[in-house]
Image 1 (spheres, rainbow, N blue to C red):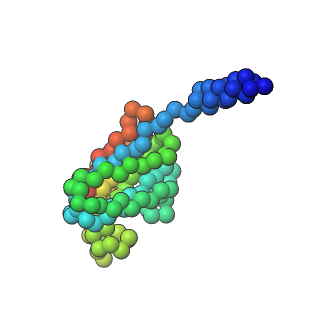
Image 2 (cartoon, rainbow, N blue to C red; image 1 turned 30 degrees about the vertical axis):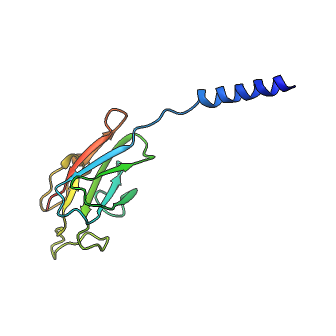
Length: 145
């Protein structure tokens, strides 16, 4: 009986480790071009087909608190591999809302994945999208004032 329990225990450990899911790379997003090193960065992630870059279209919204870093990195966990786009802004006034002027042009630094360019209007999802995979898991976004 004792041998049976030991064998069962060893078998359980073997099965538990044999079917362990592969570990996945976290998405790493590094930000540059900050206006200061204390104001938080509000980051929104979008899936294909979402209303980009609207607040309501984002499926995940993250507030990255800064602690004096000139080029902080956000680690996004539990994100399935696939195509995504990111929009972000540095919340200089701390109101958790992107502050704009009377023409709805941002008054705070903004940025998009792939460093997609924007002028009077934000870039499209296609201009900002990137493929997050085991081999491509890093993004660098320069915020523009």
